[in-house]
Every structure is written in structure tokens, then in C-alpha cells.
Amino acid sequence: MDLYSGYINKLIEELAGLPGIGAKSAQRLAFHIINLPKERVERFASTMIEAKNNVRYCGRCFTLTDQEICPICANAKRDQKTIMVVENTRDLAAYEKTGKFDGVYHVLHGAISPMLGMGPNDIKLKELMQRLQGDVEEVIIATNSSLEGETTAMYISKLIKPTGVKVTRIASGVPVGGDLEYIDEVTLLRALEGRVEL
Amino acid sequence: MDLYSGYINKLIEELAGLPGIGAKSAQRLAFHIINLPKERVERFASTMIEAKNNVRYCGRCFTLTDQEICPICANAKRDQKTIMVVENTRDLAAYEKTGKFDGVYHVLHGAISPMLGMGPNDIKLKELMQRLQGDVEEVIIATNSSLEGETTAMYISKLIKPTGVKVTRIASGVPVGGDLEYIDEVTLLRALEGRVEL
Image (cartoon, rainbow over all chains, first blue to last red; front, side, top):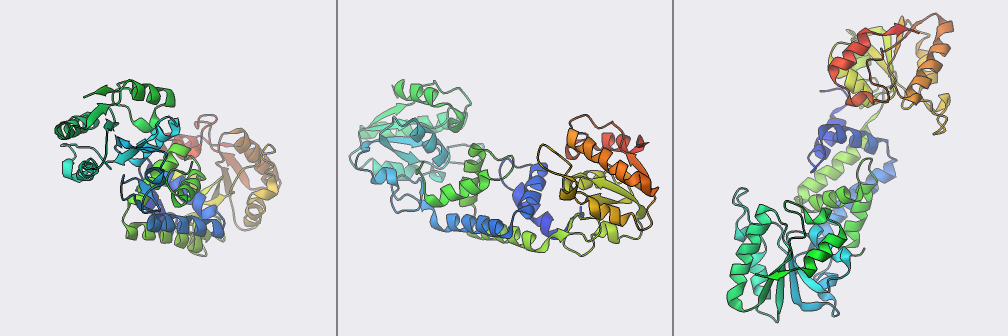
């Protein structure tokens, strides 16, 4: 459809490439952006580029940060001997919001999924095992309670057990098939408290 | 929450400022953008700026275009004597997609709304009246069937009637309170066919 202009169509295409943005929303967003003041559009564009250029993985837990080591890993008040393993940074944020977990994290950036062709080498698992050579007492597996999350949890627990480090899994207070980031804090806390040794 | 990085937070803020994007979606989109390849982010940013810089209002119908006069107004095969008045460019796109309207458009960029402080001078109404000094046979008012859309339709019809130009309103096949851009093409066509003189 060459209704508007190649410029608008290109912008609509870029927006429609974002997750959860359909064709109609992309159109709506494109018109909104074009109607913003020039300075706002330029600020938006440069914010995007700056974020991309300055944000990297934490050298220890692999969460997204603009420093070598993220504020959580760098915080001496956090219990560095207790590592919570999550699938992604959004899940870390969900647990962090409860304000009750004082350990540190390990972000896998995915889960094992034969269906999607994601194997153990496609997530930050090697890196987790390396961390266990330090002084670690417990690994709490907080992957999602989806098929992939459960598979990943089982895989990791089998890998860790021989090392003698305690492995736990957050309790099944988290509804089956649920995505951690959309679950209320009370449920997240209950799941943490009810964790069982694997 | 200073969990991630000021760069991410700024990007989340920009995204959350877009219509229909809540806090959770903004977070999800920000992480998605940061995980894109650098070239993709740069292309996205420049597409946004180019669209903003090159897209303007058509000098005749005020739709968004990158030319002086939009392709529809410039098309000699379109019936330039029949003008369909719509609230915005998305509504124009919705009717254009039916492929059955061969007249031209006039985009108001809004509707009269005392509640929102939008008066007749805040939409492209003066510009519509100027067009009527040319050779125009019919003005079809296709504003939304919302309170504002109906108010605008009534206002415009009263303004045009003294000029002797025929004024019609698309039929109420469009559900009350509905937004043109989300309505299926069949309903849009039925509404066009059933239009009545005001």
C-alpha cells in the first residue's frame, strides 16, 4: 500500500518488527511519532542508540548493565553465596521488586528448548558452573514453570549436584505455564519461601 | 528502580510515552531493542528521524505525505469533486483499503470536542471551506460515530449547507462509539453506500 509515503511505510515496518506490536499498532505508533516535535523524535532516536551502545552484560551474572559488574553483584551487603538462576533480566527485575531476596543472580538469557533448537550451550550455563568454583552455598533455580523452564531446571540440578552445592527450585506457587514477570509479588515470595531441595 | 542502568531506564521511559504501551511492554520492548544488532538499532533510529523530517501535510487534503500534493490528490483519475472528510490519516487509510471510493479526502486532524478544548479552529476546517470555493459537488462526512465525531459532522454540515454543496454522512452501519480504523471493510462499504443527505 503506497498510501502515505515510503518514509512512513519504513517506520511502520520497523515498529511492526517489535514483539507484541501488530500492523495496526505499528501504524498508530508511526503516526504518533511523526506528530511528535522534532526534538522529541531526535531524543528518542539517540536514547535508543545510547542504550544499545552503553549497555552490556554484567561480567559476573550476565544481567544488563552499563558497568563492568552490575550494582547487585558489586553490593557487598548482598549474600554472594546464594545465586538465583533466572531466564532473563525481566525475571530478575520481578524478584528484585519483592525486596526480600538478598542473594545474587545468574541470568541464563534463555532456556533449554529442543523445539526452538536451544541447547545447554546456547544459554549462560557454562558461566554458571564457573561461578560455582568460588564460594557458593546454594543455587536457587527460578526458571519459568513452563516446559522449557522445567527442563532447564532439571538439567541444571543434575549438573550441579555432583559439585556438592545445594540446589533448590522455587516452589510451584507460580502457576503452570506462567511467565515470572507477570506474577504478583506475593505469589513470587510464596514460591521463594516454599522452595524445595532438588 | 535503579536495577539496570540509566540508559535502559531512559529508553523504557521513552517507550512508555507511546500510546498504548504500558510499563511492562515498554520494559519488554527496551530489552528487545538492546538485544538487536547495532546496525538494526541505528537503522531504526534513522528511519524514525527521516520519517519525521520528510513527512508533511498534503497541501490540499492534509494527509501525511512526502510530497507537496499527496498521490491521491494528484491522481487525475480520482473524482476531485467528491470530498470525504475524515478525522485522521488512519481513517483515510481504512476507507482507501476498501478500494471502492474514488473521490478524494480531507483530513481534519481531530474532531470538535469541548471536553478536550478542541474547537472548530483547532481542526483543518477553514481549509475545507476554502476547497469548497473550487468545483465540488459533494462532501461526505466520515468522522467517527463518537460524540465528538457526530458533533463535528453536525457542525460541518451546518457550515456547508448555505454554500449549496451537497453534504452527506456515512450511514450508521458503523457501530456507535467505534473507531473507523478498527472496522472491517464490509461494514465500512455498507456505511458508505447507505449515506444520507444531512
